[in-house]
Image (cartoon, rainbow, N blue to C red; front, side, top):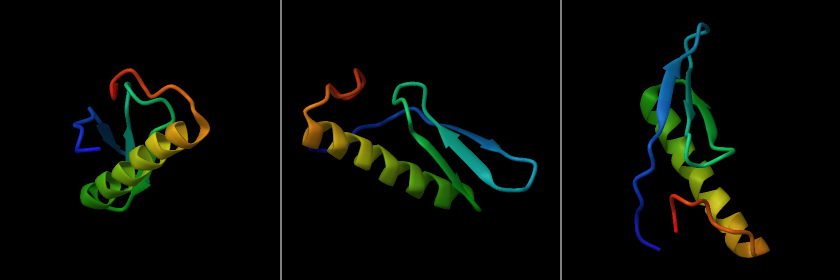
Length: 65
């Protein structure tokens, strides 16, 4: 699989950390101390969601197919 661009929304939380979510991949939630760290975690979460779908024979999110 090559790279796929996934729309991510990042919000700064009151405690100073950042939260990333995606409207196109249910379950993609990542929190980090910096935007870069949050994006790195979000990328890892997206990869794990994809791998889990493949491993369990679940349908891939519509955005990926």
